[in-house]
Image 1: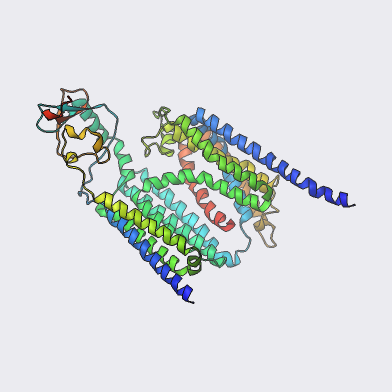
Image 2: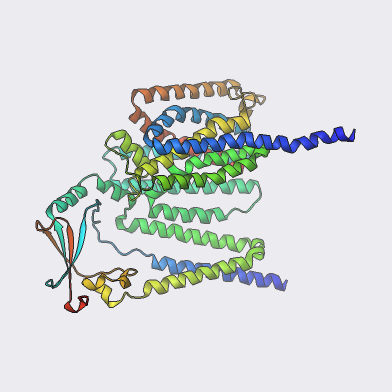
Length: 198
Length: 339
C-alpha cells in the first residue's frame, strides 16, 4: 500500500514535470506579433558579395536594379501562392488554434497519464528519467536562448567576418540601395584600419 | 513407424524457408528494380504508373473492403457509422475545398485555413475511430486524443506540410495492410516480409544519395508542374525535384504492387471476382446482386478512368487525385479494425 502511494506521488510528479517542461517550450515558442499586413515573400537565387570597405561609415546593402525588378516580379507573380500556402495568420488565428490544440493535447496526455496508474507503476522510473531529461533539455534551451550575442554581432561591421560569430550570426542597421553600379547584391561593411593583417 | 512419423516434421522447416524465399526474393527484387527504374525515369514512370495502376488498385481495395465489411454491424454499428460517415463527409469537404480553390471565391489564406480545418477534422475522426475500437476491445487508448490534438496543433502551424506528409505516408499504409493480411492468412511469410520492410529505408537512402545533387526536373509543362508540386517541390525548395518525384513514384509503385499483386496473392488468390467469400453477399438475406453490381460498376469506372487518361491526362489526373481521397480515407476504419 505504501509502495502504491509512492508511485501515485511519482505519477503526479511526472505530470507536473511534463507540464513544466512543456510550458517552457510553449512560452519560448510564442510567435512575435506580426504587423497587420503580412509582407509578401518570394525567393530566387542570385550572386552575393560581402565587401569590407575602409571608406564606408555605415553598412550598405546594394541591390542591382535588374535583381530588384526580378524580386518585384516574384512578389507580384505565382510565388506568393507558395508563401501563402506555408503560412497564414489573419488576426493570429493560426497561433491561437495551434495553442488551443496544444493545450488540449497536454490536458488529455496528463489525464491519460493519471488514469494509467498500472502502467506508471511499471514504467515509473523510466518515465521519471525521461521527464527529467526533458526538463534539462528545456532548461538548457532556455539558457542558450536567453544568452545575448557578443558585442561584435550587434552591429554590421567587418568584425562579423570571424569564426567566433558562426554560431550567433549578426544583426544591425543596414542602408538598402538599389543601384546600377554593381552586378550582384553587395553588402558593404565598414572596416577599421587596425584590423588589417600584419 | 517412428521414422515415418518424423518425416513431415523434418520437412516442414525447409518448406517454410522455401515459402519465405519464394515470397521475399521477388518482392525485394521488385523493390530494387523499381528504385533503379524510377531514379532513371521519374516523370515518365509517374505518368505511366498512375495511368495503368491507379484505377485497378482502387478496384482491388474496394473488393478488399467489401470482403472485410460484416453483413450485420451489431455492436460495431457506432464504429462503422462513424467510419463510413466520416469517409463521406471528409471526401465531400475535400472536393468542396478543391473546387473552391479553383475559383476566386476563396483567397489563398482562406484556402489554407480551410485545409487546416479539414486536417483537424480528419485527425479527430481518426481519434474517434481508435477510441471506438478500443472501447469494443475494452482497452484504454485515450492517449490517442493527446497525440491527435498535438498533431492538430502541428497541422495549424504548418497546414501545407501536413498535406504533403499525407502524400508520402499514404503509400506506406498499403504495407501495413499487407502485414495484417499476412498475419491472418500467410503467417509464415511475415518474417521475410519484415526483412524486406527493413530494407526499404536502405533502398530509399541509396536513391537519395544518387539523386541528392540531381538537377531539378523541368516543370515548364502543366503536367510536369503538377507532378513536381504533388511531390512537394513547391514546399521543399532546397531539395531536387527529381529526388522528390522519384521518391513519391517509388513509394506509389510499391503501394500499387502491394494492392494489385501481394495482398490478392496472400488473401484472395484467384477469387477476386467471386462473391462467395464476401459476407454482404454470402449471408442469408444478404445482397449478392448488389455486391456483384457494385463490383461491375467499379470495374467500369476503371475503364472510364483509362479512357479519360488517354483523352486528357492532366484533367483526369487532377480529377482522380481529388476523388481518390475517398479511398485514402476508407483505408482508416478497415485498418483500425484489423489492428
